[in-house]
Image 1: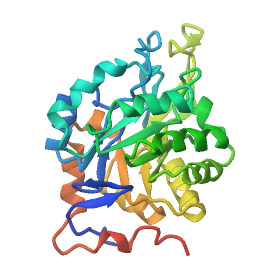
Image 2: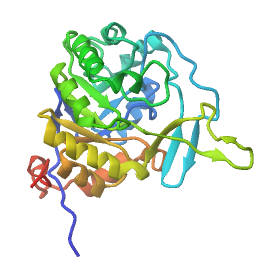
Image 3: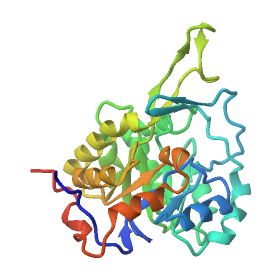
Length: 298
């Protein structure tokens, strides 16, 4: 039996943000308040990303909004958020590795929202990838020119900028290169995969929005493929996201080219999943993490 690799523990810097370890809370998962962010940091997360914050408050889509499905979760939240009202939530975690996820309908809106968090967050993550919010997310993130413009507009604020990419495109590397041209500090791959289910007994879609995004273990192979392709095409650090739920998954993502990972749906199954994974992933006699980043590229 081949024994899983373990990594040497310790802080790591990825995309201009110093993290406690390689495990980051993904956007949209328990990141709606400062208290919930602090809880995940106490539970072992190396850094946290907030719920996506936009230029105006949004109530989100009508329910049902979230449906567990096999090895995944189908959701269509619709980017509900308090907009500028979220700023005060960061007061209690301002000294922690907190990255704020932001969205907008134009480069100007991205820059406006990002400006609220200068001096309050360690970095910004651009949501150019949500598949179920009209006029936002992947509506902009599938256009390389728009991705480049939005990235450049936020980079001017002086904070590290991570760009979260959509898998719902023909060539994700074209989007990654556009973010790189715009001055991004890191790429996050991926957001959810556009999907839907139909309730046959009701003869209607299960989600109130009809379409949604699939996350969880079911999309892990897609995420690994996207990270692998981006590693070959771009020079930016990559943060792997999508179905990561075990220490072995973290190792695989890193071998594909990720310098760190974001964990989302797995938190729903195990609220202390960061500690669970870290106990298996790290050991004092482990190897230097940088040794395996991208090692599967031969």
